[in-house]
Image (cartoon, rainbow, N blue to C red; front, side, top):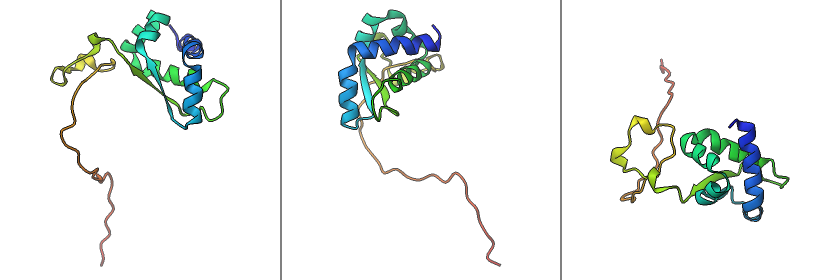
Length: 129
């Protein structure tokens, strides 16, 4: 399925299932739309499978489809997905290079938080003499 077809299908899916939620999120200035994977799978199995196999491409297609709606301030709305299949759940210790580029689910608990520390990426020094 090419990108144009993906955008068209997502446009139809969002208009059918998430139009009111998209309007409400834009009105509240929430810059995201949470999409239920199960609803997507009921709507189009091929699109759901493609999301798991090529998430970057498909998520970009979803966001382009969202931008095509004639709604003020809809640009920049990001797509989020919930209820991904159990088959995508992987332990952190089991993540391997074969998982690169695939959409996976990881569960965990935050044990400690720390401050964000700036990292020097470039420095310039001058000799004072």
